[in-house]
Every structure is written in structure tokens, then in C-alpha cells.
Image (cartoon, rainbow, N blue to C red; front, side):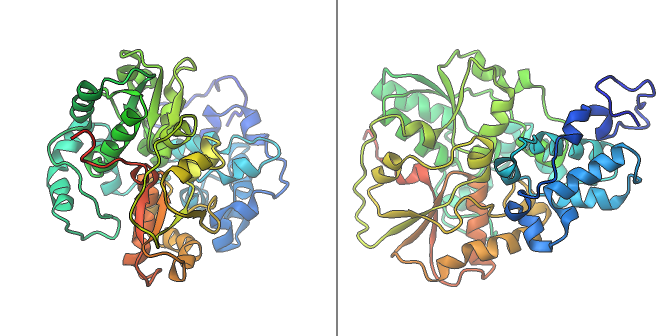
Length: 413
């Protein structure tokens, strides 16, 4: 098996899918200096104590397979599947190993060769994500369920999404009413966010327009590709993922999900910046909210793909102060909560164990209400599950940070 920069003369046929070694330049597989600094930040190494379940260990296994020192067996595929993909190792690495890029290629190679099998419900989820309008239509009963205040799933946090009005139509209504004249921000609505947790998109539109951004929402936008990257499946081309945004010629693309933002940034040209909405709002003079919650306390948790993927190490203090609520960072705020895109669905036991120690502080945290705030809806799902699975025994509320800045659904009335 070749690990050179040039294609192998014995390139695999469709009946024999290429391994990751056939698609990765040699320097990717040999760039790790084996210093071990990644171990202490790796959630699966901390769970298992097994070096094969660490970034350094996985890189060694992948390289040894590529060099045919060991056979391509199910054990390596299992260790690949066990990786959360939090990218904390990239932040810790002194050699700047592009672990996320290597992981994505390994996942794809192992899935295409049949060494890693994706559960059917996750394949269905990926298929729906690639068809966002169909996904949104099929999820209408779920939005109604949440609108009526019903619960059920341990990941389905409370909310009041509009059942029929889309974020694109809602943004058009508010733009016609307020007519802001600031930068043109194209909002990426997301497949799961728009289909199930649409109230967060509506809050994002209100906050941006209140702060003089001209919000446009491409109605025909495609999936960012995050779900497919997490699973090792082929996503739509980068041109396809970004086409709906470039047609509108905005000043920037805004996302309210750090995982979606990171994947979309992989596809966007350098001339069209992709910005996380919370980081972006730190650059403007925000309207300060005055909530009537004198005893509340907000604990801020940082999504991995914001910190380690988009390299936003802290939420701007001006944004946190604008909530009008007392706040502090949650203990170990930069550590992974175990959500990992689809990891909490594929490896629920591991995800729960990763969350357990991180969430324990909520059992004795101050505040009435106690609010756990983050900026990724999948992280919100994971944090909400802590109450449903008994990891946290006392009441707390999970919120997206944009919701704490929201002027509310009566904005403009």
C-alpha cells in the first residue's frame, strides 16, 4: 500500500475501496511527534486509560496500517469510532498535527471499505440532512409537539418553535418592518436547527436585526455537511454547500451552531467569512437586556467546535454582560460534553460518562433558576439529557446564548 503523495499505480477499483493511506499524503500520517500532550485533553483516553484510544495512539495505528506493519482489522476501526472528534488534541498539539482532517479521511475510508458500519437510523438522519426541505416538512409534527410543551426524548429540550413559518419568511417580515442598514449577514439555518429547534433561529434573526444587521436567509441552502463528516459519509460538493449563499453576495455568513459553522467554513471561499453569531456580536454595541430574574445564575459552557475548531477561546464579555444576568464559566468549560455531533447517538454510554463528571457541578450550583448556556444546539441536547438520565438531580435550564440576548417574540409589535 503506497503512502506517497502520488496516486498508487495499483489504485483500488470500485470493488476494493481505497484505504485512508491511499488518500492521505505521507506527512499527514507521520506528523505526530508522540509528545503525549494530547492524552490529558482526550476524553476517550481519560475514560479508558488505553493509549490506542488517544489521538497519539490512533495516529500510530493508522500509520502502522498504512505501512502494512499491522493488518487492517476491526480493532483499529473501533478505536476510530470511539473518537468523539472534539479536536481538543489540535489545540494541545505543539506540532500542529491536523488531526481533524486525518480523522475525517480515516472515517470515510473505513466506512467505504465496510470496516466501520453506520447504524441505519444515522444513515437515515444523514439522508434527511442532505434534503433540508424534506426534513423540515417531516419534522412538522415534532415542532408542534414542542410548541404544545410536550417532552419525551431525553435530548428534546423545551422550546416553542413556530410550526409553519420558516426562518427565511420570518426574517423577510422583520427586515421589511425594521429596514436595518448595516452589514448583510446571510444566516445559515441548519438542518436539525431549522427542522426541530427553529425558535433559536428566530431569536438569532431578532438579535441581528436589532443590532442593525441586514439578515438574509437563503431559502434553498443545502446541508453544511457536518453530519456526513462525523459519520464518514460523502457530503455534497463544497460548491453545492455554499452556492445559495454566494448567489446573495452577502458581507458574511452567520451561524448559530459551532459545528455547522466549522463545516461550512471548510466549504466557503476566503472572500466570504463564516462567523459564529456570538463571536460576531462581540464586535458591536449590544442592547443590554433587563430580565426580571434577580436570583438567576448563568454558567457558560463552550462547544468544542467553537473553541478548538473555530479557535474562539472565550465568549466576549460584552456579550455575556449584555444578557443582564450574573454569569460565570462552568467548570471545565472548554472540555468536551460528549455530544460530538452525532457521537451522543452513536456511542451514548461513552457520551454519558464524558458528561457525568463535567455536569456534576449543577447538582450544587447557585442560582434560581440555574441556567446552563452554550452556543450549539447539539451540546444543548447533551446537557439536557443530564437531567433525564439522572446525572443531575436538581432543576436547571438549558439555553442557547442567543436566547439570553433575545428581545423576544414581541419584538417590533
